[in-house]
Amino acid sequence: MAKKGDWVQIYFIGLNPEQRASNLPEDTRRVPLEIRIKGFLLNDEAKIGDTVKIETPVGREVEGKLEEIYPEYKHNFGKPVIELLQVGKQLREMIEGDQE
Image 1: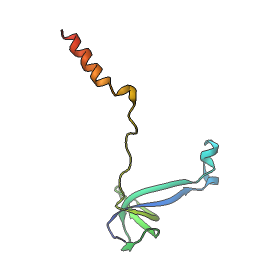
Image 2: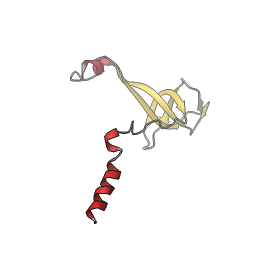
Image 3: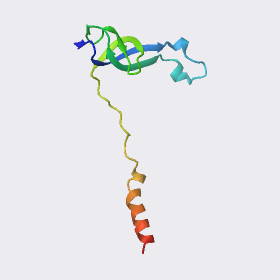
Image 4: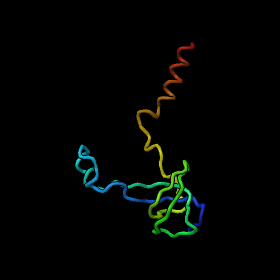
């Protein structure tokens, strides 16, 4: 159960497929634009699935379905690029070689 002021994530449909721009690729155009936003809960309390209002860090009020309470950041920089793993070592060797 989330309480007023808790950091939460909400979800809502921003655009239905028929509202999407016609110049989008077909596979993108045929699905709704789904939006997820994090902010501070304005409702006194709510549970996952409830429709709630939040205030974003920039002060915007947004309404949507409560999806997570204290959501984690799940992004990363992806898998390492094999070709780049040795660049630092090779560069140091090149620099050290120039100093001789």
